[in-house]
Image: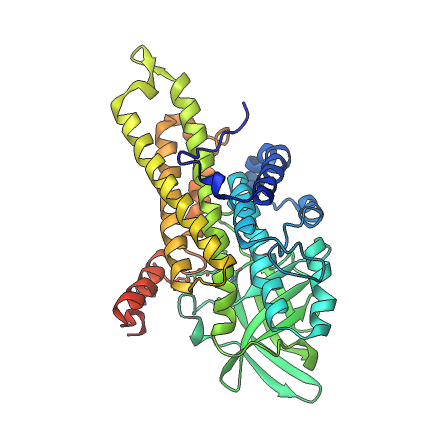
Length: 388
Ligand SMILES: Cc1cc2nc3c(=O)[nH]c(=O)nc-3n(C[C@H](O)[C@H](O)[C@H](O)COP(=O)(O)OP(=O)(O)OC[C@H]3O[C@@H](n4cnc5c(N)ncnc54)[C@H](O)[C@@H]3O)c2cc1C
């Protein structure tokens, strides 16, 4: 039976016609090309590489960027496409978030004309893949403490250090590596095959299995002068990229929750216990009432943040609120839906547990749930609690 996205307040009526067209196109694509294969990719721990050129054809990579082969969609349309992709699998949305928001966005914002012309059309078309290396084994929530460093040498820079938990690391043709040059954080575009640079996948994940998560090693890795993004200096460079990616996550989480809700609702109407559908029991209905309320709130938060972004009026703390609230909501929704499915819910025939396991990564990456609470705490009190 066709997927029905719960939209209790008709929030999609707030979208433009073009944004609804993006929704319909991506939803059909996800239904045909992602949903039928998502469980297998999760089980086998593989990323569906065959989809990458299709993402490019559909304008899903770097969608809100202008020029250089990018689609130039509204930020709201970008959010909508993230929502639809994550309904399929968080690993797929993660691929597009990293490529668009964490690699193409900084090249577009901070790169030279030469860097933009070289990389953006290729990345937009899905002919090249990028990754974003900020986190290190010993520096996650506190990236400013990073050890990876760059030293200026004749003709370029020598990079040393390591990055960990890097999405698309082993798939990438280019890694945006953040490193300290004279104590200031700078971004360097390191091409696959550069001497002294290697990527290896992290084995044994229970979460985001349809996504490559890798470690990067840089050992006396020499890159040319032209590898550095000239416009990004200090932590605000990588943080601006994360703000864009977190925005997509806030929408994506809604899609994962809607997918689980749809599945659990259908199941509950046909599963008979004590001579009636389990949907008829008050305790089950209470779960649906709670999830319905929370999905509706999350939809409206995502939509409003999209419009603020499109009007150039948003602030990063608003993105923190949306990412924190919506991912937490989606994770709880996925777990509750899994519960409604009983034993069936632990199998790969259903999507709830796969979504719940994926969302365990989503609630940690791009700023953990608690770090975003501290961002909001600082925003309202003026006191930065995480700085010790
Ligand atoms: C699947 C996956 C993909 C990822 N992809 C990327 C990527 O592409 N690029 C990239 O650079 N990184 C990536 N990451 C890394 C991710 O951003 C980090 O895992 C995240 O920032 C948290 O860092 P950490 O895991 O080191 O946890 P830690 O920082 O060690 O945190 C552990 C716990 O301590 C808490 N904590 C930390 N500091 C404080 C504080 N001051 N006050 C209160 N509590 C605190 C945290 O909230 C958390 O609960 C990815 C991670 C995962 C799981």
